[in-house]
Image (cartoon, rainbow, N blue to C red; front, top):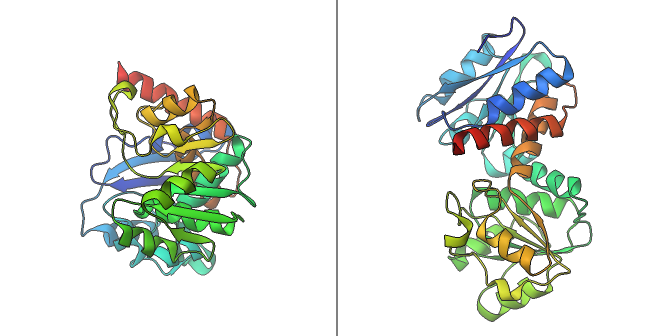
Length: 283
């Protein structure tokens, strides 16, 4: 790849070769006519602060941060936005005022944006979230901030669901028959676990009982490989509206791009680039 002569941002993590960030962000920069570029840099656990120093020195104009560096980078920046402070975890580093480095978390907001792009508003909605890990927690917090009336949470560990429910006053942990009722009554059902990742849709173990899904609901999955997970395929057959996991990836990246450049990117261009890359990898 020919490197731009303009500002360069980096996506850091370990492993990093699988990341779709460079193709998405470089497509966004081109579409906006910006002389920016993104490169992927492998950074092993324990050296995240060194990568942050490369932003301080001006080598990089910002960072996208993935596993396993999100927590240590949060401790290496000068300040955190509200979402990052809540979780002490960042996926974005941007240069703020007085050259202070700000750590951000765009995942939850990106998920809500992806629903909005699909015509789904969560304001006043009942939402059921399956999972209580890092991605689920960011989604739960963003759903609460976006006005969801009830956020029910089920998880393999009920204690994990209870912990996640502390993120917003509208959130509640549920289990057993109560969880089944919550799924039936939800306007939006979200799989925020990795169940289904990398598995052909016909071979998947599903994160919820599909018999609980009906045609009035929206079913969203944060898994994007495959794009049509077993859950989404089954929900579609039951007449539900489905939202795939690539939307969250695109829209959290769109928030990153805007934070770095001040220019709103074209999510459609980012998604096309990601879909093309995924198709090429699938052979």
